[in-house]
Image (cartoon, rainbow, N blue to C red):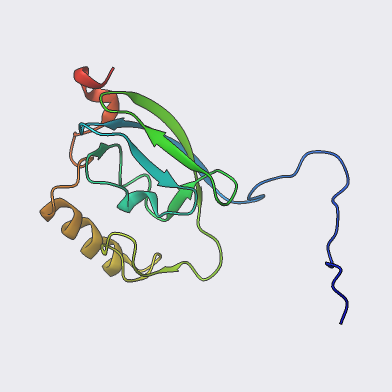
Length: 136
């Protein structure tokens, strides 16, 4: 066996992230008292309960960032981020424990929404970052 690594170097130019997938933008405000970081492939719907944003719009999506990066949300600050649909089989487990199963199953979505509301996650029924005076 050779000790030399087998690798390829990409040609110069732009690399398209997530070509052909649906994207959306959401305005996010950190209503907590500490900075919050969310990783690039974390299901954004399940992000920290102190983040106020349209969680319904974020269903089945993650940050449109390269793998391994994260977005940081400072207390009291609102900012807009781009989200992209999960690919593959679109079956999630873990994260904040809100979603357990196929993202495209209406029952899974309803159960996750109910769990999030019961657990005090911000971002439902008018509690949107864009509407919060204290987060501007």
